[in-house]
Length: 68
Image 1 (cartoon, rainbow, N blue to C red):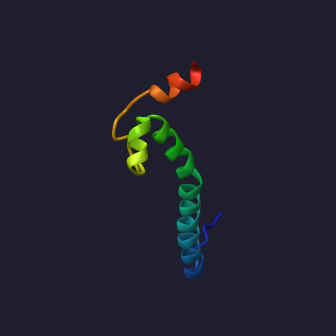
Image 2: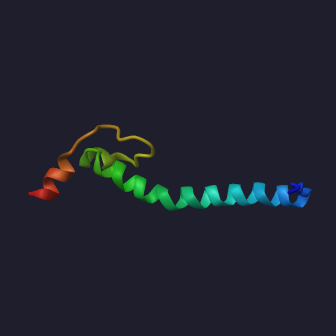
């Protein structure tokens, strides 16, 4: 069986398709990640400003409040 070479158009399409799919995945998963990070942050600290990557002050107070 002989392998076929990809044409230049196919390579360009695959590249931009991969970039687009990665952006869609990030845009879909980031809201879930933000909710999890916000829930692990202290409630009053979250009011000061948004938390982007990691909680500034790690706390499980939100979970104890919900589970009471």
